[in-house]
Length: 73
Image (cartoon, rainbow, N blue to C red; front, side, top):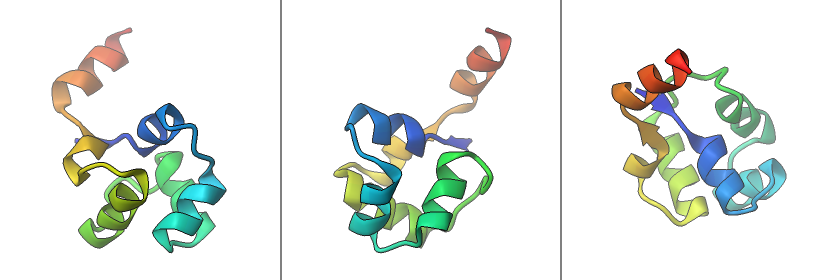
């Protein structure tokens, strides 16, 4: 599974700075997750991000089918 924080964040019109501030996480951590540099963030980190985005942790994941479809495109 891949994390899709960037997609959810952008749909809400939220900047990286705003997400970091609302989640209480360092901007560098949020930036790395957003850019896919951190592939498997901890559940605690994802919980903070989900709360800041007003969604569920499961909303931040895309399943293998979505990943495969995007890679074929």
